[in-house]
Length: 337
Image (cartoon, rainbow, N blue to C red; front, side, top):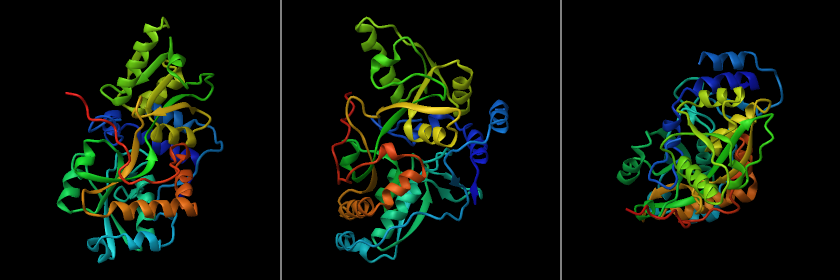
């Protein structure tokens, strides 16, 4: 079913009780894992009706589709070519828009499942989705239990030792504020003296603290805080009450929140999740299986015919679009020990 903005927001604020650390575990960047309310229910109940992103939370998804790509099919390894169906692992973090459970509480839906559909279509295959815990997908991929993983996985040089990648999104962090904020955060100087929230132990916390250190070294005001939050619902309440001026976290989740509740929240800036390096999100396939080139061609087919852009627009993630998919693009460097 297609639901109104108010209904979606009520569901989102309920889902927002998911711990941010658990959420950002599925939003991995420089490290091997980057872990992203009664009052909240009241906010949703009293929210005015206004234009916002409309989505379906039904298990019967009317997904964007693409056509078969002869180029991609020709690149398939024999193991994949002989299959009628590919099995793709996703990790349901519990919060839209990446992967979450539909109204039946068992069917995975979201941006990543839509990308899986495009890849399968371009390869001339059906797709079977399997929900895997974040910690379990690497073994599932290496053992052959799944053919691919589409779960907001950041390309790193360490992961490239055992995984082949096909990029499909830029790894972005976002700055969320209340809708009436006059802040614009495009560079580190913009946060000087501001009250900033973040999730403890996350990659974005490391970036925030480094920005603050550099600002202070330049003689700028330190940030106030940082204020730490474990629940997305607490972040939203803190922003609306004015307890914090901005929150930095995975852009996908924050951009979606702003898209469905534009009268309450907005994203006022983004930065790459690999700062100061550039990070990419990619489909993972087993190293040496020969499938990555075919998946890359499938993604580029969807980019060229516009279906890829339609999926991004469906979930409010246009800012994370890539111009072309690449096989094994440069990854974030290994962490120095």
